[in-house]
Length: 311
Ligand code: NAP
Image 1 (cartoon, helix red, strand yellow):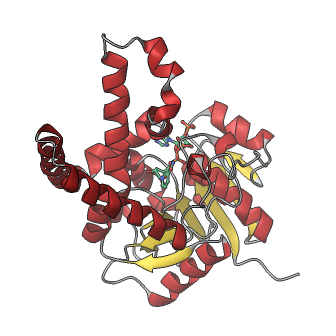
Image 2 (cartoon, rainbow, N blue to C red):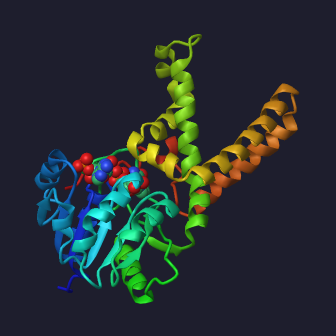
């Protein structure tokens, strides 16, 4: 049997992402010991029932002691407080990383607390579902998904390579970019689609001329596809909106302009404009399938990629 990549890995936060990491770390034998920490006694007890790790504690500081790799998987608005809490217990030479959906804000919150000799490498796996909590995770969540690092100017290349290898063994492909570029890119590919989904589902919920029963009954005609995104964790998405404000506002401004264009084309019966846009967008969907980021079955492939919960 090959030796584990890290003697001890500490997972701070054990929701969808943390528990998926716990499962793949065990499956791949990546750690000698997995220490789990989470804020609430209830989540900790559930993680223990699911046998996600080797030791369990409410105290994040306890979990990270002697760890070679520390992965913080909490809502982005809490990353500063967590970094402050664990800082004095981090081992010299340890790698500290996170999985937060925004990067510039997480760096601004965490970096000031990172002691000398600890390698802080911000990261973000582009993999998830609308579910949360330790029951929601599964070991192949990261398969063929991208994990983006936003290294700091003084990031140690050996530590970055070690962390990259860890994520490759979790199934992911690796990319690096600067934090501002990450935040702008994610604003369009992830944050805006969620905001639009929250908005359209909210609008439908407020309508008086169409009853709520009709919205639910006839949802398969399009609405349903937005409800999956709009069912995502409210705390996580509140924090994403607050912590990637500038990039999201920039993308929302562009979105509003394009929507006005579409509105005008519909008002003036400009079928050519509508047809051209809809043809262009259909090609985007084809490119996503060709890139292996979705499968070409009806219903957005959801039934085909249903994952049983694995402990
Ligand atoms: P989740 O399932 O809701 O789990 C959140 C974890 O963070 C739980 O262990 C929770 O602890 C803990 N937590 C919540 N509030 C906290 C606070 N104020 N202080 C300390 N700990 C707190 O969330 P998730 O989906 O795994 O997301 C975790 C991170 O991954 C977020 O930064 C998110 O942006 C990022 N991310 C998410 C996705 C996705 O699709 N979900 C994808 C990529 C990246 P308790 O349960 O004990 O309260």
